[in-house]
Length: 132
Picture 1 (tube, one colour):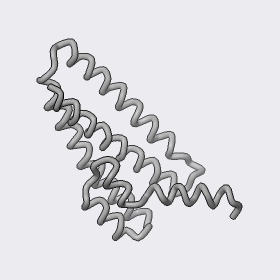
Picture 2 (cartoon, helix red, strand yellow):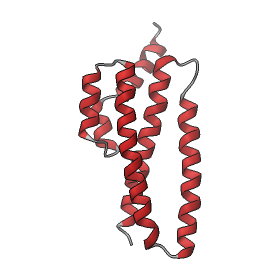
Picture 3 (cartoon, helix red, strand yellow):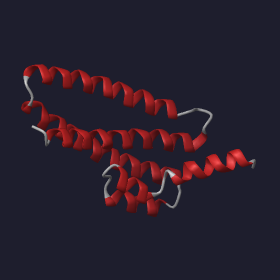
Picture 4 (cartoon, one colour):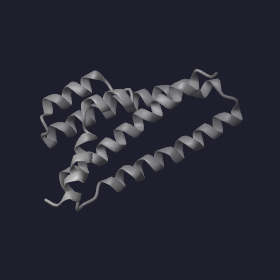
């Protein structure tokens, strides 16, 4: 393995540290624990990511629904359009990481990108709600 591939592999693997997940985007402790138990097995890691994504999506939807009634009609329309654009971005960006030549790591990276982007947006909307 040449040095470039070694460095890239190391960087990618460091992205999947459960401690990093849990701290950065308010991901659950259960998710960290699930990844620990997955022991690097792709299918199990994807199951962990899927379960956490469902939780974070529910969190996002709750924050969005709680924020909408707090806004004026004009701001509500702006948030709705922003959210539509954000969803398009999240989906396209996650899909980009699903490189067909990237093997199983590309699948994990794509799913992780979807998850962490969703969790980040949920946190963003929760923080925005505090301003109203």
